Length: 283
Image (tube, rainbow, N blue to C red):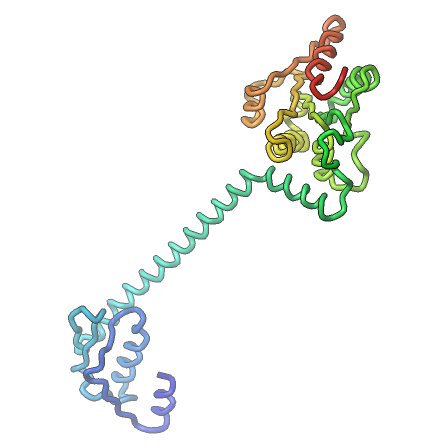
């Protein structure tokens, strides 16, 4: 069409497209409009123009060019609707895929973080996690707690570590300075035989505490062959409606110990804690 237009600017052109298999569809719409406009303005002389015919497909009945203007208007509406439909379907599909991808990324966020930092620790020179032997743990217990519950953890250090020789990993004391918090958490969980979770309202509110809990669950599944390594201690009562479903499932599946917080119940409580940890740590 461009070549013919350039020639039509120089000389008078006559074209005869009679008996050519012309199409009347969206793909040919620009060509039909070009023919019609050039014929109407007399710029190009299309021989026997009114006798031309076009068809929607090779199997459909031909449409005569005597009504080409009506055919073009009809095609413009149909093609416009078709274009809008394609745009709407495409946008809908993209939105659906984005929502689906976002959902999958959110659902497997803990698994992705766990494997990312585990891979990083093995291939980027992070501190050695542990040797091939399961006995080569650095700590007996990693204690997961909220900062506000540090007084209880300090008492825990006295009862379990100093009085009973259980080696605890405490993030205030044992995390490696300068390393990413996420890496410190995963390494601490990975190089500890057990993870003790100090449940309290403060724990539930802390995003890092929830991170530690989920990483411990990933450790159970992917590194310990479903060995139970999480031990729950209820330090303070938590309203049921404030407990996330993931934590509630864990509470329903595992036995736990409640801290009595009185002078007569405390010795019994710490003996029970030691007895529970006895599979891995000799009290």
